[in-house]
Amino acid sequence: MSKPALYIAGASTISHQPTFRNPGFSAALGPVGAASALINPDYKEYIDAGLLRRMSKVLRMSVACARDCIAQAGIEQPDAIVVGTGLGCLQDTEKFLNTSLTVEGLLPPTSFIQSTHNTMAGQISLSIGNHGYNMTHTQNTLSFEHALLDASMLLREGDRNVLVGAADEHIEILDDIAGRLGLEAASPLTSGASFFILSNENTGNALGKLADVYTCGGTGSIREEIDAFLDRNGLRAGDIDLALYAGDSVHGAASNVSYAALSGVYATASAFALHYAADVLGSGVGVRNVLICNTLRKNNLGLTLLKAVEA
Amino acid sequence: MITSMDSLKEDLKKQIIEQLNLEDLTVADIADDALLFNDQGLGLDSIDALELIVLLEKYHGIQLTNPEEGKEAFKSVNTMAEYIRKRKEA
Image (cartoon, rainbow over all chains, first blue to last red; front, side, top):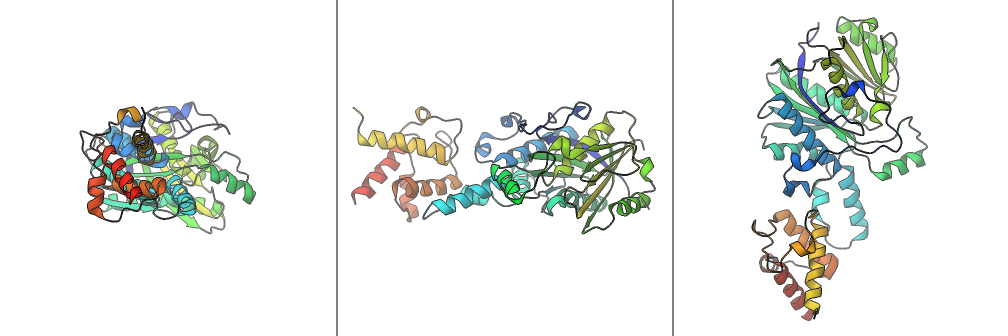
């Protein structure tokens, strides 16, 4: 039986593409280049200068996106804040560890305090004065899907609006590590933050509906898993108008787009895909069903089904 | 004439800007007697106080362990410079 749909009432992404405050961006994106850079907004519009000076890249991105999509949804406060991150606040982690290797005696506290994975969710809550449920999920490439599952359960238990998102940041040492491990990704390693307001009712401005989310670790046949997931939602592969994938494409879908080629590679790039999907659905171009198939890491499968609001 | 105290204050201002990521400030923006923990001055907070303790050890080799001393020493750049001078003389 299909689950009650949840509505995407706001969406905001900062990435290496012109995604921030740019509705309709999905129509104009090309693959992200190796020399691409993060496109930063003026963070002072979103974050108090006193807080901003301490924030690393991923914190600035997260707080700005969170505030932007709360404004889009026209709500005062979400009932909960749920964040997914694969590698957390890497810049601060690296800074703290480097300092601990080079400095004798006392270590500077800021990078230590802000090096934990849940700093993003915490900084968002401090920034907007939110006292609700605050949770961070870190499950490698399925971190965002797990955050979505948590948010979905909260909404189905009675919450009205949940802020859910994901962020990961690129630091130079990742290229070095990837090189040493002989990992050659088809797309460059990048940074990205995407946040959404999920609501259990449509107040008129919803971009699309989140129909279902599924994760599986150590999966065997991806094709069988996809078929079973679609079957549980009363669909077949041929009903999927657009499949967004990282890793393996979706056999039988009307069209396939590699979201990893658009976002670049980071652990929670499927959040970029969700915003891309919401942007396509919100553009009213006749797309009704979108499937995000995340196999960025081969043995981790994440499936997210979205539908047009009227579907 | 630039004295060694003037030079120390200039260095302290540079170190404070760097250690506390005061991106929008330059040395010229920080008056010697500006109150560091007052909104009319630099508006620093408790985390900054910890960073200043690290700064003293990192750049000047001084360990500040008595909180009461810190209260006095961290009033302004003037008091910080004076505290460093006294500790080095001791």
